[in-house]
Image (tube, rainbow over all chains, first blue to last red; front, side, top):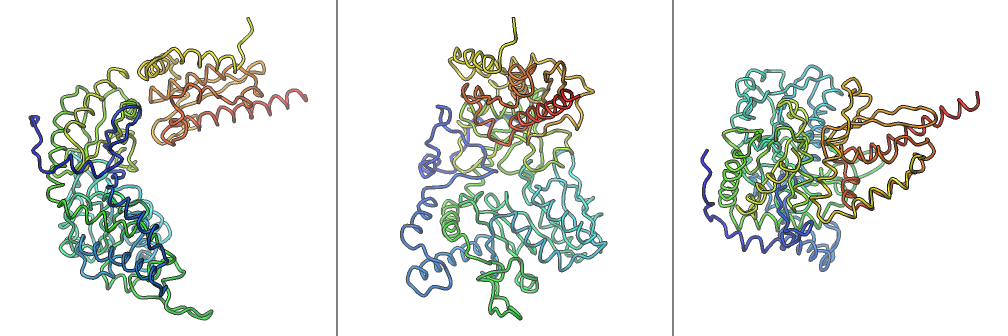
Length: 414
Length: 148
């Protein structure tokens, strides 16, 4: 691949950067170069202000109070549900369940739908590129139910083998739980085709959207997925809040998850009846402030436009990939045809952690290690990678800083 | 000349580090220590001797002679290996009680890997704990030997 000489200006990055206060800080006396966006993205001023505004002006518990503050807080909280509904194209607002994040969403499905439907001998299908969050809940369920966890293999480019997937699907497959964008490789999986194939054999499909929600246009009705889970903090929103989408008829028929306040209709010591969706799955006082600020984050993304964001990030990815390929001994892990916004690599003779430590001393934040995908690392015969992941505020100059930093690290470490 | 105390060795390292002006010099020194640390023989690189951090792996072997504990170690990451090397220089060849009591203030004093010591991204803390555990184990043996 020939290195592009410049990155077309799709976004007004200078003005965007001005909205992210943290990007002004210095790390080890150098300007911060933040390339760990796949772990968590930074937050614009509007999101930070929304949290502060809630606690300053209308902090109250929601849904039950009749006073003004409670009403304002409830309205703001529920407004986020509508914005999320629109953001992922859900048919009904009650299909949006607020969770702590993607992990909790997947666990919710495993502990409710999973316990209800999985019986001994059933098969649950995941891929070799899943995050531990989309492996362990199913392992726990399979052990409990004497079911079998099956793995869709990954080829040398870091793509799923579709032939193998279709072969693995059978009438015993009850669930396919699949990542839409790999956090370790950047691969975009063809989830729509996979969902359609799974439905033909009668399996349900959960899509792990932790990495995809910020980059791709999500339309859960078009995908026809049964569940979709993602986290606010990777979409410029706060930590500790995420979403589980589920088809209404499924969520309605599933048993409850956690018991407590909010999720009940009526409690007596003899029998409790449960609340309707979505409150059935939102026991206890929720994370009100962060949920409200989550809407601000989604509004921010919408205003700039996902298409422009994606184009900018793709340009950064192409540029970074071309530059990295010039470095002797560097091997990119994950060369799928469809990728978004992150590049993982190893350098011959150097442990990724050592590279991460040296880069940190130059103010460059990357992620090193197994990225919570140990089976995938094993597949590639490595213990971990260095991962640079991009967001809408990153620049070509920052990639140049990364490349220079890598050259220096190699000189010091080899 | 008798062997230096743990505190004296720590002070020497602190003094060495005070001479460096830049982070590059400090890290080059540590990387150099890492590269110079004698390799651990393959037979010792077992699951049993492994101290698993989140990212890098450290193998630690201890032995006990004449009332003193001796350490050998290796790592797949060179910076961690340099840190291991310093810990060995400070602690190896001392009596169990001295190792158990060691505060290892030099780690903070040299002011460059407080962060490293705190994150789960390396086995450094786990390694210190394991070195002290060996010392505690050998102290028990020492007690039994003295009673006999």
